[in-house]
Length: 231
Image 1: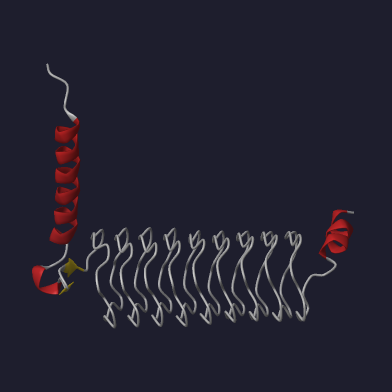
Image 2: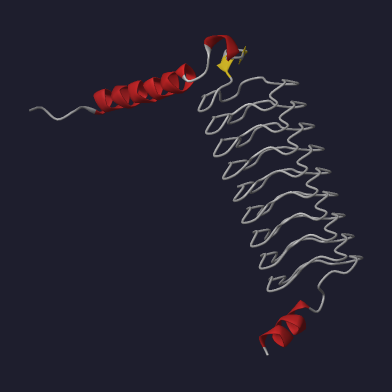
């Protein structure tokens, strides 16, 4: 029996992916499938680079969808399900994700300036190197989220859950972290200039070499506080 060539293996893989996508689409009534700019808005769809500006995507199940590099500026994604979706390098400025599910979603290098993420469920969101200036994460569940080196000027994180989140080198200048949960978070080398951390839970977090000029209630004495907890 001759071994399969790389070309045959590639074609077989593409065929299996297509069959899987067709099976997912088959689960949705044909009349309920919305297509925008050639992109079928269903679970598992593959639409890298698609133009979905101002699209109404409320309540849609787009889990495992590939929107890498897509343009979703101003899109309405309230209550949408985007678990394990790929939004790396996507343009999300001004989009509304309120109460959406973004669990294990990839958003690396994405731009979400002024976007709203109020009360999202975003466990293990991967948003390293993203641009989130003036985004609103009020009441969001960002447990285990990854925001390493993200730009987050004036971001709103009031009462957000950032337990065990990773924010090393994140630029949080002017951010509002009032009443947020930062327990066991990692914020080494982050910038918290002019930020607000009133009422923030800081237990067991690490805040090494952070810039805290003009920060309100920042953990300037966190190492001493950590030592007292260990006693």
